[in-house]
Length: 478
Image (cartoon, rainbow, N blue to C red; front, side, top):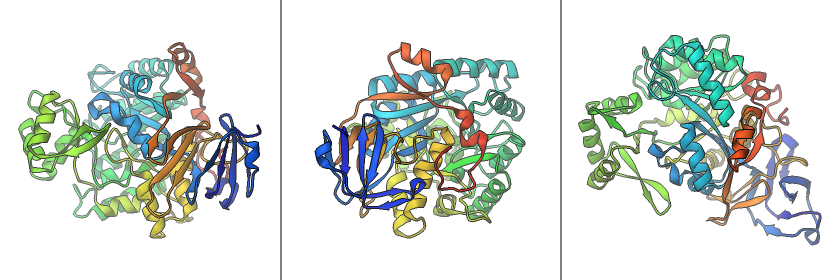
């Protein structure tokens, strides 16, 4: 047989290869081998009639969380149902990320950053360059592709934050920074400080919209405008933003205080004390929403039921607050620079185990309102994320590309099917995939394969973080 799988019908949207319309996609093994208006179904071992679905390059979510405190045991299924084919766990911790990838895998490609967290992976709030170097080297050998600095939740000093970015840059490793330090919080002031800390360096700043909630300036609109202006002026920084109303943070408390600075901020934003008792009151009132495992997914619950769930788990759970204004979310997704290119590079969810894996559903809503074209939707949910990770065979469906495909109902915006490496993961709402393929650097391959994982080596140094943006946004990944 010429094809192991043939996708028949549907509307292919593949801007990197200039295709938009009725095309069949022939897959052999884990790759795309032929794309044409009509391919012979007799040459295929399996034909999938995808009906009226859009066929797009597999969705890549550059910001998810799969750790225990966030309910990671359900994260893989939640991402797969959302049409995700590849995901980057933004901060692990590595042992929890890899444990769930082994036990709960739903057939996805996964990469991860190791967290630089005071009292956990580094000694205190001011680790030395040597300690950060040792953390990075251990993390890369384990299989992570770089570091996540958790400033908004668990801050380090500005000086050590700068050192961590320098260490990662010197190794050409991935590095992302949730803005905030021992001097600034997770707000527009923290974002401004993040840009300054990254001067002359390469950095990924995640969830741009989350710094722009009207906490410092009178209007969230003023804050997102300032953030976008700074990103346009500082193109050494790559970024993503999400489209959900709720944020995601930790509900864990120690000595009567929420551990996460972001949780504390969300409480004070609504007038609650930044204490364990304040969090309990917010949960009971419905301002704070506890993630509870129901039916194989995590869902938001409030009231006494939520308080009990949170207490029964020793407060080690995730919590969501409805804190993200629409102006910040929509501008971060759609704003363009003076040359007409998007300022924020990608749409991500900050989801995974958080119930806000809405890249496809909310992104398609922007398409239906003509805020994004279909090609721009693909650019921000697949093509640019592939470039950012350094995956030239992802983000498009040309001959020789990876057979990662997401199907979408254009009317509802709901994912209808997906394939990862030519294998079905999602079909008409049913999850049919298993296992995990770990995207890693050459440093981590041996460790992961000795543990039984299927791996795929990527070159972070060849990604957008270090090579910059292409002059043609719809060109094939380099």
